Length: 272
Image 1 (cartoon, rainbow, N blue to C red):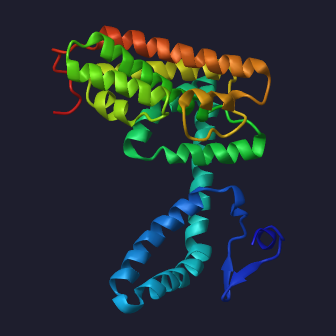
Image 2 (cartoon, rainbow, N blue to C red):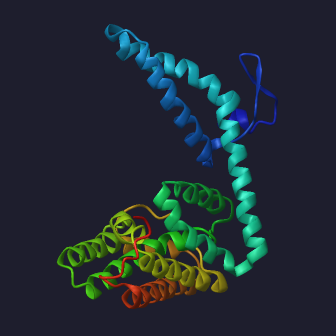
Image 3 (tube, rainbow, N blue to C red):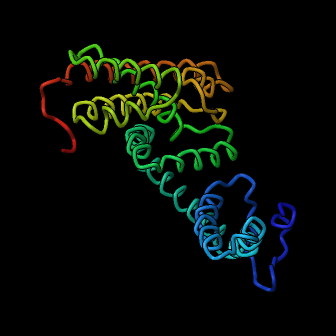
């Protein structure tokens, strides 16, 4: 398929032209196609006799999805990737070193709504093409650390035993486990003070990365947040040092503001 798509000759499938794109380093076409396949599979499963469903369901789903993906869905995903890439480049061109700060401040909301995967998708494309990504991923990497700082600040400030326990466990989960959701939904989405502190920390860390040109040279895997900092390695050692400094800056701003702004008796919930 890759050789066929990159051969330069017109391509058709069942007599219908196919957009010649090398999807080997693309993610959005897969997202779009699998989302559509989910609905197709459910429809096929609902209308398949139980006695032959185990065979009929995957066969019919594949029969429908292969041409649908090649003709329509994969090209749509490719165009979406191009459009989003242009949007990110526009933000970078207009705001310069402020671009990583803006993206970093948006990341908590992307994670909150489950749309943060687009950051990784675009970062992979840039990283594959240039060997370095310095706009989106620095803020995404530091995100977990800032949640750890926020949770720790609230745990130390609060006199409520339940909030203290949640704060300490959320801090450990974010920094060691690399999972921000307990802090995200337990504090960030609940209290205006927590939201303000985290966004300020994200912006500060992203701004430092923007002015120093700090970026990643490898796409980080899951797992402990502190191990993900190794993604800053691969270029000059100063890049790794600046990545660590940016992390410290973000955590310091988040912790200080979180500790100052949070109050147990302040009815400052974002919702409710």
